[in-house]
Length: 291
Image 1 (cartoon, rainbow, N blue to C red):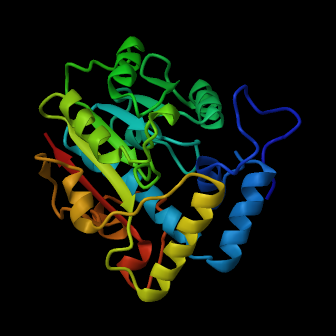
Image 2: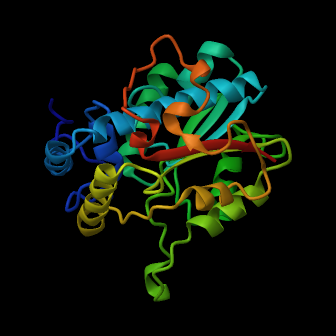
């Protein structure tokens, strides 16, 4: 599998000196929105731990199922932060099958490649009146919320579904000149919970070492070391810490669960079948909750 034309692209501002977590995720899912530096790093990890690919696929299928569930609950507005590149179906594509012409989505990512390719996808398969993508930094919730409002796509005075899928296990550091190495993830999520109006939902997935088989825990330790050294630093949280990210929102049954266990009845006709010996091998906890 080859990636995008490295002589024709990249867009301005892209860093090709380090592999990108977003572009590697695209590669794990079978996409082509990646560069040689991403593929080399990803192939090295896949050679040691081929289970990485089904873990990523299971997480992507959780995104599809949670969007279907939320559309079924009447949600018609989505904000997808850390949306990544358009591989294996974006939220608006899943929603359109259930509520054609009704659902509005704003995608947000800081990665220039993810933004550029999402724009390309939306030009071909989206509706500019209902779907858009912006480049933004989730570490500035109020500024990002203003950007979202300025798109005119979503009415933030009405309920939305905020999606934070596989983004919070990448460390969200303070500004470089702050002198701090604290992970801002929980405080950022708390602010986003404050920003959404009652009736809104928060859906997220998050990598964990909690409760995984010993051989998988070894994989996660080595993955963290590899990502910390070469890409985006990783932070794992246990089940209780993931549950706390929902604050006082009301968790949807079954609560915080492995990605493969969350509402399997919401699987679509084209769902990728991912088989693990145990659900804990998926290594990613997921859930949704209502304000």
